[in-house]
Image (cartoon, rainbow, N blue to C red; front, side, top):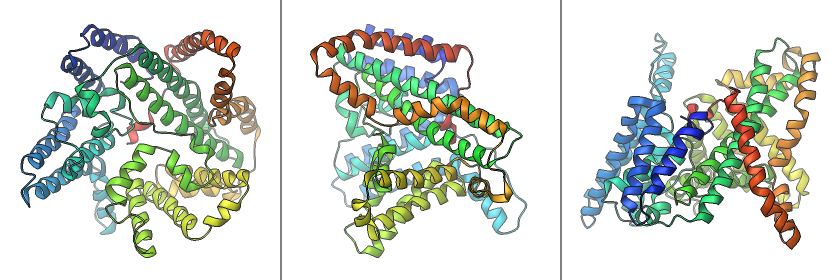
Amino acid sequence: MVFSSVSFLFIFLPTVLIVYYLVPRKWVSCKNAVLLAASLLFYFYGEQLLVFVMLLSAGLDYVWALVIERYRQNKYVPKIALALSIAGSIAILGYFKYAGFFVGNFSRLFGLDEVVLSIALPIGISFYTFQTMSYTIDVYRGGIKAQKNPLAYATYVAMFPQLVAGPIVRYTEVSGELASRVNTFADFSAGVKRFVIGLSKKVLIANTFAGLAQAITYSSESTVLFYWMSAAAFFFQVYFDFSGYSDMAIGLGKMFGFHFPENFNYPYTAKSVTEFWRRWHMTLGRWFRDYVYIPLGGNRVSKLKWVRNVVIVWFLTGFWHGANWNFIVWGLYFAVFLILEKLVFKSALKKMPSFLARFYTLAVVFIGFVLFNADSLPEAIGNLSAMFGGAGLKLSGAEALYYLRSFAFLFVIAIVAATPVVPNLIAKLRKKTAAQKVFNAMEPVVLVALLLWTAGFLVDGSFNPFLYFRF
C-alpha cells in the first residue's frame, strides 16, 4: 500500500484516524498499540511475509540495546553487543539487497556461469535498518536509555508514515512523543495541509513527469532532444516524488501527534553541490555524518584523511541507494565535486554570481541523476553520450517537439514549485490584514480542490509509479 492510492486515502487512513482518536488522550500506550497494529497491516498489505524481516531486524536491535544498557559498566559486553547489533543489521540488509550484486560480480570476475539470485527486496529495508542501527548506537553512546517497552519500540520502527520512504527518524527525535504526546487541532490541520501538498506534488507533478519519461522510452524516435527531455523529466520526478512523500510522512506524523524532521529544503536553489546535499534528503545526510563521517574523524584530520572520509561516505551513500555499479559511480561522482569545492574552487564559488553558481550546481546534479536513473552503468554512459549527440543522433524530431510543446507548461510549474518563490510571496502577503483574511478563507477551499483533483487522477487509474521499490 502506498500513500498515493485510493485504498489508503479513502479506506485505510480514515479508519485508522477514527480508531486512533476514539482512544482517550491519556491512554498513550493504547494509541501506540493502534498505530502499531495499523502499521503492521499497512506493511503486510504490500509485503506479506516480508514483514517478519522488519520485525527480526527491529527485534535484534531491541535486545542488543537492552544488553548494552544492562551491562553498561562492563568493559567488553557493550562493545560486543554493539558489534553484534551492527553486524546483524548489515547482514540482513546485505542478504536481501546486495547478495545478488556480490554473487553476480564474483561470477563475472572469475569467469563462472552467472548465478541469478531471486531474492525479494523488502520495501523500506534501507530506511528501517538505518533507524534501528542508529538506535543501538545512540544507546551505546549514552545519548538515550534503552526502551524497555517493546510496544513503544516497535511503534517507533514500524510507524507507517515514515516506514517505506523516510524521512529517517531517529529514536531520540520521537522518544518523548512515544511516551507522552498531545494531539492538537492545530497540529492535525497543519498535518492535513502538509499531506495534501505532498500528495499533489507526487500525483500531479511527479507522476506526470514519470508518464512523460515512459512515453519517451517507448517512442520509436531517438533524438538528442528526447534524451534531454527524458533526463529533465526524471530530474523533476525524483524531486517531487521524494519530497512529496516526505511531506506526506511529516503531515501524517502531525496527524498522530509526532513531529518528524524535515527532509528537503528547496535543494534545486543551492549555489554549490555541498549546499545541495545539505538540502536534499537531509536525514540521510545527517545519518552518514553522525555515524560514519564523524567517527572516521570528520574534517578534523589531515587533508588526505579527509578526502578518504568523503570518499568512504559517498561510496556508502551511493551503495545505500542501490546494488548496482551506477549507484556507486553516482556516489563517487558527487564525492569528487565535494572534494573539489572544498580544496580547489571554494573561494571562486563564493565570488561567482548567484545565477552562475546555481547553474553550475544544477548542471552537476542533472548529470548525476542521469547516472542515478539508469539500470546499469553501460546504460548510463549510453544515455549521457546520446544527450551530447553520440552515435550521430539528430537534434530533434516531430515527436520530440510535440512532447516539448505539450509538457512545456508542466516544466514551468515544476521550476516555480521547486523554489520558495510562492511560499515566500504568500508569507509576505499574509502580513497584511486584508490578505490574511482572504488566505484564511481560501486555504481550505484550495486544499479540498487539490485533494479532489489528485483523487480524480488516482480513481481514473493514472500512472502511479513507486520509486522506493529500488530502495
